[in-house]
Length: 202
Image (cartoon, rainbow, N blue to C red; front, side):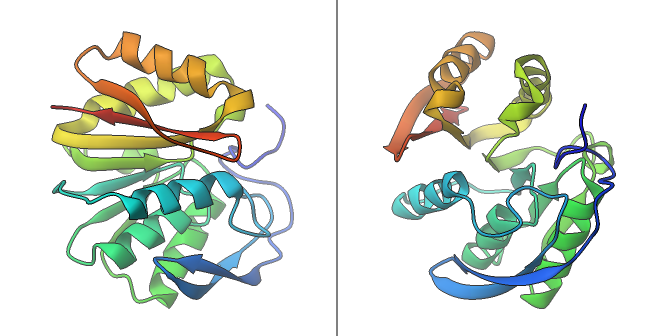
């Protein structure tokens, strides 16, 4: 696997930089760096996911998981919107984890828990999973990733995943529905070539 944002230890220069992004309806200044996903700006897929989530009433309870947190936009937005809930930001990339922790501290978000996948308690279940999943790791690795985390949805919980149509959003939606028959799977939004896939555990 080439050196990329899904590497555990990126070899490129850190070169931290500040950028301004909109999270939870207001501009926020965060730190990003090379060797993580979309270091220059809030990528379109994540922007569409956050905008979609903001449109729906949220009745879930329990911790929220940001799967593949990058520098943290999904986890940070969740913590800003739900200050009473515990937010878990999980990524294999140690630089991503360090940046997310730094950004949570800058924004005063004490309930953000940043962790490598293996450091999340095995018995922890989530009221929500929010993710712009790393499609480019390949179908087999992506399926293995989702097979590990989607079963950790609590009863009444929901997962929302944003995927570009040209990168296989439709086929991924079909796979989730077939692989997890206990989940109610639907496309909840379509915007600018991206689909938001929702999977509810009744």
